Image 1 (cartoon, chains in turn blue, red):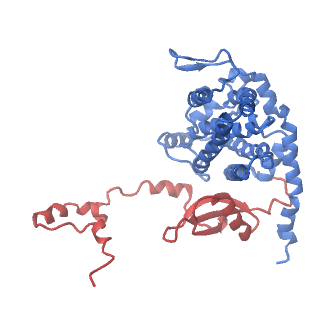
Image 2: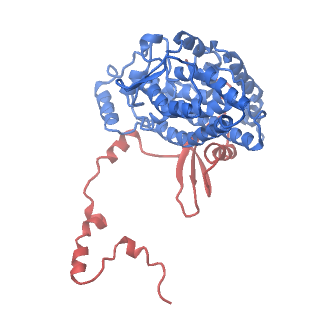
Image 3: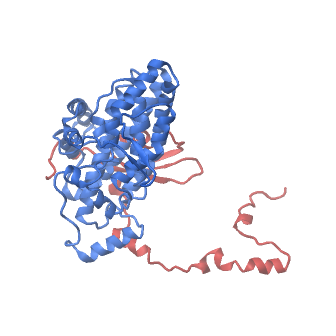
Length: 328
Length: 120
């Protein structure tokens, strides 16, 4: 997922490093070959992957936090089991992706611990949707249905990614996302076919999450927020489509379903332009987006605090297991 | 930023995880993980990669104990001799029509692999 904005671009296109190796590298990825962790790669490619995958991985972990809040509040035992399984998957996805990042970080001598520090000091960003509050049980369903739906659109677009370890991780992740999507749909369906009050909390949830869902795919172009990595990730065959193309694919797939449940979205201007073959919609506030991903969103600080508490409270496990304390 | 030496710097080791789905299956590489020791690695492997799938066996191997091809050596594998017909049944396919002329069937892979049982 995880199109992000960053301050200033990376200027290490690999061409200056070694033109011959660079050309061979480009020929390989253009022929659909995969790059492995120990293969030569341009610095720009490595840095782009690190940014993308560390953000993806840490967002999986940060995304589990608002969802786990719903485990005790889930209405039935079956729903508790379902959402627990999903939270566990998200942590598992985080583990996979952090592992991929760690191997990429090796030449810089950085480890998982450094990634956690980067997260806590704000250098490593996590996805805009996970900075937001959840209010009702409908939000738990909506996250599974539409937030994971948006994630599925972004992630399936990278199933042919040129970097082998990321591609393999994504294949595992997307297979599990199918369960997440249906888990979310099941919650939504029950509410949509439920009482007046249930329908109201569902509509309220769609209304509150709508701007975040549009923001999810990132700005249409760098001019909106300063800079964007979408061209670089496409050049290196990491993903295939632009932010806007992905957003349109999301609207194509999900809006008919939203409407089929007699739900509306909070945008009077929204319509499908038959000639241009695309959805016309009200742009979300991209300045707000920038604020949110700079850890100034409604729940940014609390979620980071939770992560910090987990990190500090569980440190004793590491100490207990570490060799220095072992008597064996 | 250089790696900061700390308690956890040497705590985690890299493990590669292999598993098979059924008794008859072959071990397949799944992914890697970080763990402080073999026991934790085995338990993490189940948590990380086998939450749903059937699993018949799991191995964890310290990455440093795996000796494999280098990036350059892997590239050379793509330059191997392409025509190996002499080594595969594909190179002997003409026998099918020869046997047909003699009103006999071809003893191909499907046929031979079906000879598990013979008449008592």
